[in-house]
Image (cartoon, rainbow, N blue to C red; front, side, top):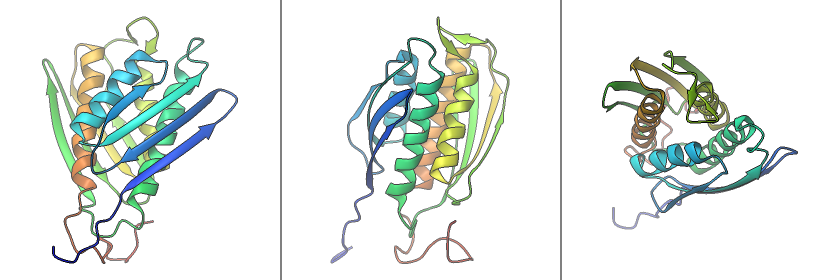
Length: 202
């Protein structure tokens, strides 16, 4: 619209603990995708999240992934959720809700997102194999999304409807999540109004 001020929806988060050191930038309106976390499967999933969500994501992480990927996966989810919350700001004008299905061969996943400001996740689905590759526990998929939801102030319902292969199942969930987040974070309404009958998303 003529005369409208473009809203920058970008955030950079630096997080350091005794277990990991993370530098992450998120742009809700697109950009490059680059993930170097020391956990190759997580990098693969972040690449899918960025590209299918049309998000700009750059993340560098060092830490104890060689011992166990758990801390890296959870902490990157925390950092990404924190950046998402900051980039959304007051959440004025966003669509707020998003949902998507994503198939990957024999797998089918559904994700529904509400940028409610109230953290909640329901994860329903049994991963068909306990491990993905040599060292990535399938349970870490849920851990990542839980960390993202809690720190991003999102309500997320994830359903793995059909699954026979853990790698494909995880990828379908990340792709559906990417599409749902993209839809929920679009600026589709009055950019001076919070999409809530309460007047606040918190």
